Image (cartoon, rainbow, N blue to C red; front, top):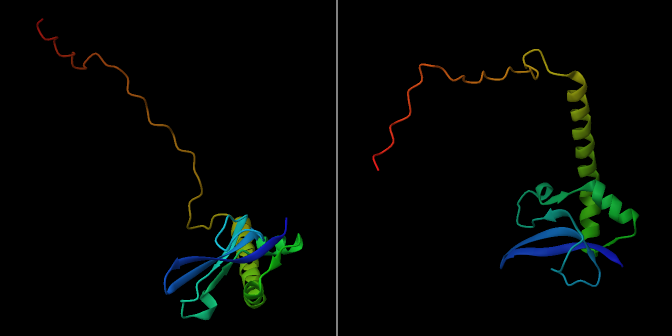
Length: 133
């Protein structure tokens, strides 16, 4: 099976929105996909915010032989390194926060005591009398 990385069109007339997907090359443009790898919204004014990619999955599909389309290759060339840097920073931030533990202002998880179970008492009201038959 030949896998391509290409765009799948969503949105409406005059308002395009694309998903960047891994798809069998024989499938139609909007056909059944293998995996969603990101998105592209050409209507966003800020060019840096137009593309969203999952860099680890894009690298994986390219490593197993998936070929990007011409337009997707341009997007990957422009934006992949930026998303890889963001992912690395996020991973480093998680590692720092996990190794530091809770800060003095934050309370860590504390075991809480279960609420006491109500016990039947002699002073409880009697059940209402049964209706006459």
